[in-house]
Image 1 (cartoon, rainbow, N blue to C red):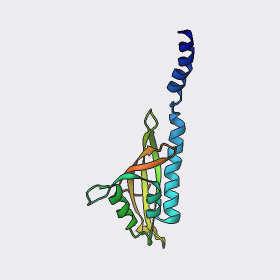
Image 2 (cartoon, helix red, strand yellow):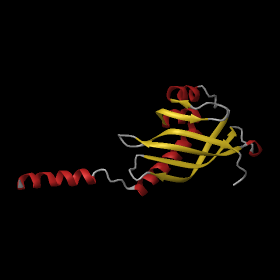
Image 3 (spheres, helix red, strand yellow):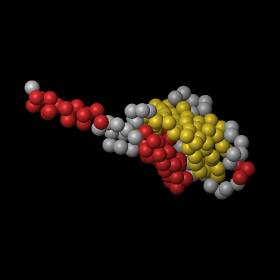
Image 4 (cartoon, helix red, strand yellow):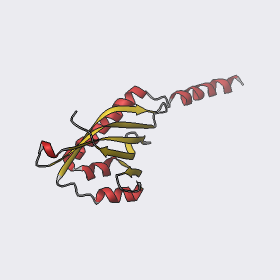
Length: 152
């Protein structure tokens, strides 16, 4: 019986501690992931960025449309002509679940023509819900935004 106790105790201890998540560290990682997502949008275009950062089951909520899910969301993004404008965003806050497997970012976005004209910039707010992947990293599982933000 003693052998069983000494054999199982380390296994029990390991299984209880191996999944501990450093929430503050994950918040920093997720914030940087959202910043990287925006940077890819600026460099390669909004469609390329979303395709790279969207989970295969992602849902997009867009004005005037029913929710777009999974393949329909990817098809919608892939069919978007983003050649004439740049979309960037800045996360203002990051929230992570205690389990560290889901989180969200929200902040402000700016869209402007590639031939910059400050008067033609559009601004708004967004929220992205993220899911931590089994192999690490984060992917967007739900994204929504709206227009209507004045100058910061």
